[in-house]
Image (tube, rainbow, N blue to C red; front, top):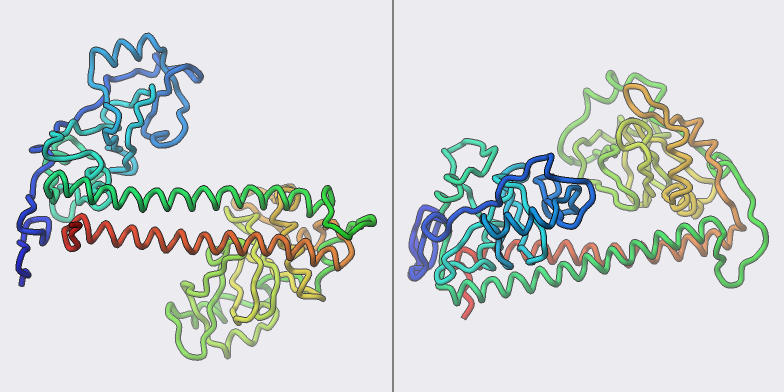
Length: 413
């Protein structure tokens, strides 16, 4: 039952004073004049954006004379028009900033809207939730003009459109500010790693020469899932949901750096997992992806949670757990990654061996200095992680706001 003040439409329940309109009733689809490959160069004055570079950095350019000629004689977007991708990632949108640029015909289009009925700012946000017109159950491979024109949108009065767009745009600005803060802090951390982990910069109070040790000298165990028939012992008992007395099975897809997901694809009964204690994780240790495209991914397992380690992962356990952070940070640094890539073997899949891991060369100051450097980097990581959690919440809030405001479930007065 539709609540008072609302009505049922083809696109769902909307306020009674809103309209349901096809985009073709409110706008005309436009695109730039076709540019041919022989009219572009690798470097030039006017960037030419193709579907692959749309919203990114241009990798092709056209001459200013051609740009001025086509801009004057053919369709060209106005500042504030919303450009959308009609191929590739369908409906990806960019607000045109008015800077000199040219766009690939038919793959990148925009709507010349009736500004008295539809404002571009509202349209930009509506593109994030729009349901493109298609036959029921069909998959859209391309946004043809007919699909765009036949797509329905919920349309409040222009003043309300502007209020909705202003609120959502402010949320976008908050998100962008956070993204910039995170990017800046990551760059600072990267620089600190490069200097602190190599001894180029010393923390106050530390001096003396560093040594070089092999990673295996730090470890009580360097191993992987081996020595038993995985297909016979493990595969038959794996389940896809967490149940009592099961352990999560950590695979390479479940970790990235300090981030571990214990909500995994597979779980294994504890009674089976504990038969293989070398690959049961419980204390702080370092994991290496050793097979496939993820070779080079190094994870700092936090401890405190017991899990079972899947294949394609090298496990390093330490004489002193505190050294796990030192090894993690060094092997994640450019110098550490270079060592990994140097020993990576090709073939059907990239591979790093356990022997390779044992022999990685680690710069080694005294323990107090190792711990102090690790602490500095961990604090930097913590600051970044707090901001990333905040960013994820903002994005979630933004998504909820769009669903509420763009359907009229929440009205701005």
